[in-house]
Image (cartoon, rainbow, N blue to C red; front, side, top):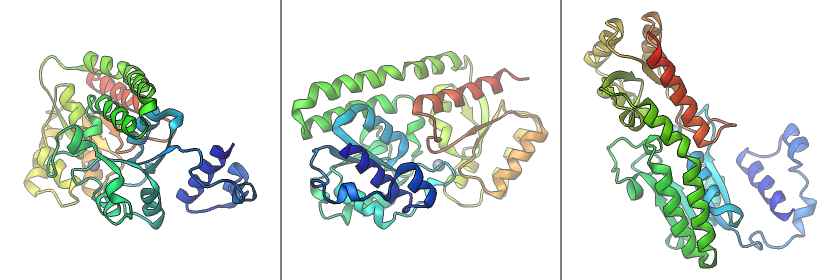
Length: 310
Ligand SMILES: [Zn+2]
C-alpha cells in the first residue's frame, strides 16, 4: 500500500500537480495517509530515473519489485530533442541511485542535471549510446532502434543493480534473461523482413536508421535527415535529390518520424503521398499503451506492408 501511494505521488509530481480529474482517478490529493508514514525510502527500493521511457521499461523489467523507476520523457506529442528539465526532474535525479539515459548528445540536459546534483559521484549513470553501443556524439544517437541494444542494456542493468544489492544478484540476472527472451519476436521479425538485396528508402530524420540497417534497407537521403535531426534547414540540393527520389519512385518507402515534423518534412510527406510511395510512421518515444516490443513490432508490420505494396 505504502508503495502504491508513493507512486501516485510521483505521478502527480510529473504531471504537474493535481487536477480535478486526476484527483478523482488517482486520489492524489489524499495526502493524509502519507504525512504520518515512515520516511520515503523505508522500503529500501533502489530508485532509478530513466531519461526515456523505453529505457525505463528495461530497468523495471530487470529490477522488478526491488526498484522504483521513473521515466522523464514519455509524451509522444513532444520532441525529446527539445526537452528542458524542470525542478521536479532535478529532484528525481537527486534522489536516484541509478540513472539511465541515452547520451551521445541526445539528452545532454541529463549531464547537467546529474552534475548539479548533490550526490553526483555516488550515482551509477549509464549512457546507453556511449557506454553500451560505443556510439559517440556526432554519430546517429537513436540506438534504441538497434534491435541489439535492449538485450545489452538488460545485462548491464543486472550487473549494476547487483553491485547495489548483491543478495538479489541471481534474481536480477534471471529477470534480465527473461526480458531478453521476451524480445525474441522482434529478433524473428527482423530476420523475416531482412531484404535479400539492398533496398533504397528515404527518411524524414535518422531515428529509424539502425533498424533500417538491420533490415538491409539503405537510407538514400542521409544529409537531408541529419539536417532535420539537427534542427537546421536541409540544403536545397538535398531537398531536390529527395524530391527526385519520390517523383522518380526510386525508393520503396518513406519513414516519417511524426515526433519531429517541420514544414519541409510535411511537404516531403505530401509529395510521397501524391506519388503513392508508402509512408511508415515512427516515433522517437514509446507510445502510451505499448511496450517496447509491441511498439517495434507494430512499426515493422507497417514496413512489411509498405515493402509488399506495389
Ligand atoms: Zn531524433
